[in-house]
Amino acid sequence: MRIEQTSVLILASLLCLLSSWPPLLDAQLSGISARSLDALLQDYAFRAFAQHPRTGTPYAARLPSNLSGLQATAMRLRSGSLKNRGVRSYNEFQIPVGITEQPYVERLGLVYHNLANWSSIFYPLPGFTYLAPVLGLLAYDASDLSASSLPELYIRASYKPILISFPNLTSAPADGLSPKCVYFDLDGSVQFDNVLSGNVCSATQQGHFSIAVESTAPSPAPNAAAPPPNSGRKGNSRVWTVVGSLVGGFALLALLGILVVLLRRCKNGKKVQQMEWAADGGETLQRTSVGNTKAPLAMGTRTRPVLENEYVP
Image 1 (tube, rainbow, N blue to C red):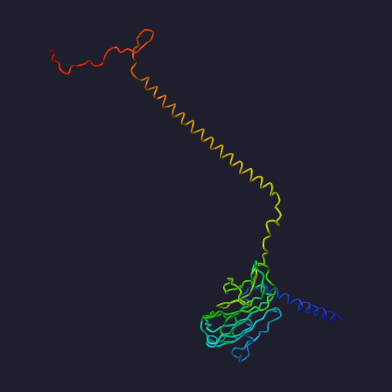
Image 2 (cartoon, rainbow, N blue to C red; image 1 turned 135 degrees about the vertical axis):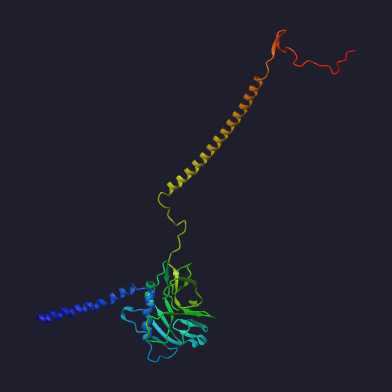
């Protein structure tokens, strides 16, 4: 009996552990970076290749349960064939002729990503709402199909751009808001572009792409907006501030005018005083009575007259 009870407990513990395993994996997956996810999907995508894969044939990767919802596909191509022929249709991607890669490899593998409901987790875009899943197109060296964690090749369109179609948008954009093509570069930078006719985006190099629209609602009309609390008090205080500034300015001008007048009066008073001092400092004349009045009297001449010719006839 004890052995059976112990077996039952062990079996129940295993069932609980197995049932909790996928959520734990999901939690771990949500904590990895987008670049780590690229390497992980490349590994599973290259595993999908057969022993002798056919050139130009897409192979869907079998992803584990913790990657449920994601899609990854791999296609092996010759470098010369990709440049001269392109790929007419690779899921949502249309690859034109003239594609070149750096560094050059003889065979390369194009790995396709569809992040579906994981788009906003690995590629958050604050202020925007995704209208389509994030799609990725990355190139790797496919000379050794058993290799993992390969660095990406830098592919670029020389003549015509790469086209990405998004036939089914999840929701219609709001009135007045135009959807935008979103491009995520491998270095983490984000670029926006206009959406072409038919919900198509264009690109000249590899990366991740989607369509998004601004999620911020337009500001309400001024009439509909309710006045903030204490707005009347703030308005009155501003009026009194303006009035006080004007009154203070006029008072300052009046004081300056009074100061100018006082300075002019003081200057004129000094001139008059100097003139009086000059008059008082001159020679004082004696006065004598002439009738009922007094007049200044000179005691004598200062310089005696001299005849020009002393000859007296």
